[in-house]
Length: 127
Image 1 (cartoon, rainbow, N blue to C red):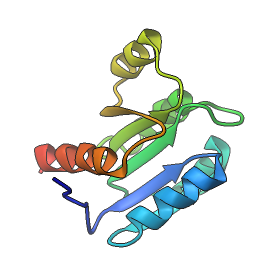
Image 2 (tube, rainbow, N blue to C red):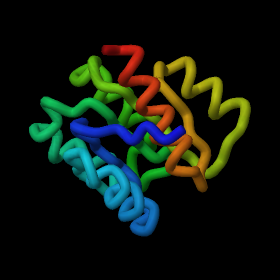
Image 3 (cartoon, helix red, strand yellow):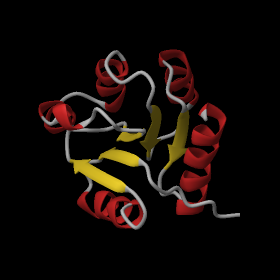
């Protein structure tokens, strides 16, 4: 069942323009969305993240990867929820995601319903 999130502040960090645009279009229907193509771009804009509820971060990014970006952001925005998206799933990836503290891991290409349900569940459990 689709429980589309609404009234959230979402940051997307994804270097694939098509995936980034799809995420932006989908989530901006009922949320405030900021999108960045690299970890460094996101870090440069972090003064805009004070009210961010959800970070959707790709694993493979130019420069710093998604785990490195998460480790940087988590120390400053610890109340937010963090979802790692990746096109390459492995046991090591899943274990790393769990160990560093991501709230969810979603495999690309993803069904927006699954991604949205993951975010909804995370927000509901933290409310």
